[in-house]
Image (cartoon, rainbow, N blue to C red; front, side):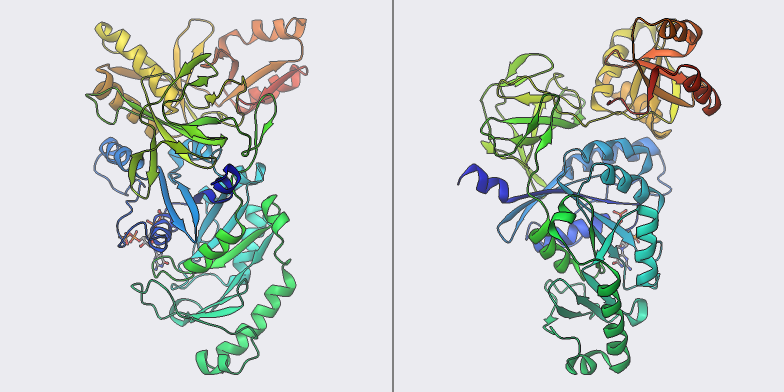
Length: 528
Ligand code: G4P
């Protein structure tokens, strides 16, 4: 098959949601349709269970699951679909943000009763800023929830999306009768039987057909006619280009648990979701159909087995053909690497593959060469953009608690940071190490893993930092910059790449500093 055909055959996407909206359930039903799994319950949720006895044990359990569910691939209607797993827990939000750099589109799951929740807002914002095409799935229609129009309003307002419903519910909760599929122009009746793989759909292309009254009763039929008409007149019609460019978001309704409305979603997804897209690098935009292979690391999983120091680096293939045992350039190290056993992922298995194509994810065994954001090419010196670090929310000094093990500690911290567990800063003044994280949970993870994987012990010390900003002076040699460095010496640090960072101790001091130093830029992410 030609490269272009392989590319057009692939859809790589992520499912994002607030925890509990139904991401795991939906993933599982999608895999069932693809025939990739045989029964429900096969996909393990990677969310932190409420009331887990010990957080870090839970995290360990999850790290296992997390490798298994990092990429779930299956085929449907001759299309190869790769689902990239995105943790829903907010302490792991940064992991999710990074994974979003490797998807070509997303499905957003929303709970019909809870509506738009906090994590949904944050994740959708990231997708919106990058113009990632999104489809919305409103889940749990078998339960009482918000009115469909109210919910669509809420989505428009809180998520700043422009929606176009491609299906419309007939009742909800106890009275849920099914959905009218605006996309395919048919009615799908709800029987509440989750064992049914394929729902019976009834072709009713014209809603005025009296058959509809026979099927769902006059009242429900009339309501549906009114609402479907209203929906189609109030909301813009579907437009492929607008969707692909991230300016229009189709909405589907259903119940993942009951396997209802999922086929409609999947069929439409396969029809409209984009194949692997071009990606921006520091030198140029790279097209998937270019002959030469390029790709980048968006995730690293380390030390699953403490006896073997092996790590798995997850590479998204951007262009060309990736082949086993062919040397590729690791651009940051300017060194050629060859991979004898690259893994590809199928549903829950991983297997060694000889060739992979744009849109695919390969897992490369790594002994410490990679860090998140690294680019591999066939020789060209380019670096992919778009794996940013955000300012952490929490900051603590990290101290060595066992002087005999300082080498181990050093190495452990280094590798955990490469993996993207947290961010390391070094204070300019005295070189002390500061760990910045998105959630408080990460400190436990780091301490636990340092001890169990590296044999090192650490303690933490609180530090009052409100935000980390990456500093970019207009002129490195200016008086103003020299003054800034002198006055703020106590608050300056370097990140892992050696970039200068200002650790503001309060919102107020950050504002004052920004106002005072007008020719210095304060960035909220490491990428500018
Ligand atoms: P998440 O990955 O987004 O966190 O959500 P997950 O799929 O784990 O679903 C969260 C809960 O919502 C689960 O119940 C799941 O069974 C339920 N759920 C998912 N889809 C639907 C739906 O369409 N209708 C209804 N009524 N419930 C749904 P749980 O009790 O937390 O877990 P479990 O014990 O059932 O696994």
